[in-house]
Image (cartoon, rainbow, N blue to C red):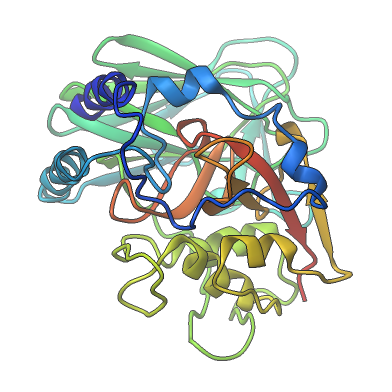
Length: 366
């Protein structure tokens, strides 16, 4: 967890760098007075700005700080790949006394992992997934569930970490039918448990992947990422929000470069431009251009609590009266997929480490 320590210390150093040149993706000019959202200052967290370097365009970060962060990521990436998936059908690694088995799914055709799941009522023992941790490192934990409208909106996962059991809540009434990132945890070598509390919850599958900046396991869906044309999938007829996330994830680990849009280098706006092009939307390369992209099949979202998977999210990391500096694709459970100047590549990370949420756009998918 050295990166967290570095983030905190770097944020404290940043308090004294008032005149530091920001490493931003736009010029930071103030929005015109005619733009109503220029007056939306309620989501800019001044305390959060002081606490860490925003992980989008990394405003205020020095070259030395970014180099240290990226060296940490590179060290992590040099470790041998490791991932493990435990499904509710995995023999000897799953137990859920009293839970009821089912198959399929709902919520727009979202299905279970491996074809089945188990579901709890309002009480009973928790479901337990047993995972093997080969070496003591940071591991990213993903979960999969079949979403039903009456699932718990606060399903509690407990992860055995090096510092004890850590709990996190997810809304299982949505975001089902694909891998959802729960978080990254320091875990000790050995057999470890990931448990899910009973109470209108679905236990389907979990995965652990070594490292912080990781890809989830393959979910069996094939998405094309060709340069020309619109969205195409070999296994789905009608695209939905989870398909937007799948397309965005196909660009993960592509190196970041300011104002660049190629297969091998991309800025944050390039990543969103390429993603939404698959669904019939031709966005420009500027953050402000993408915010002002006008189509009758686009809806603007102001309240962060109303975000849905597949929304494009906009940030003003330099303050509410400055320009939009960063864009990303919301991937559910408080995560975004984005080309990050901080990490130096396309990653999926927690939105709470991006300062200055400004608004979002929801696109109708063709």
